[in-house]
Length: 147
Image: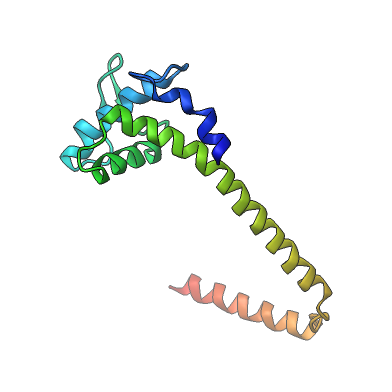
């Protein structure tokens, strides 16, 4: 996590961070906070580029919602650009935590798989139980057709 913060240290320069689509993502975030969320809308028409487009049609609202929450929780202490920058840094910090959680979940799943494979086998399906299940399914189908 310390490396994540160190890698993103340059983001705290004045203005919008440099990057390929960073300015466009900032404009989308600012538009959503100022025009959509402020009016109680979760999605809407983004008119900042060209003829416009639906704000969250291609890129979901997760990043923007986190930036808006940071701005609200700071009680006016963060500008939109600072909330944007903090959200970027938090996404880098969250990546190792998410990888760790996935690794733990994978180990737990492997452990459960070994337990399942090492448990004694259950009673095998007999032809009688299969024919009973088939009779129940065909009875359900005929009931549905009569409705």
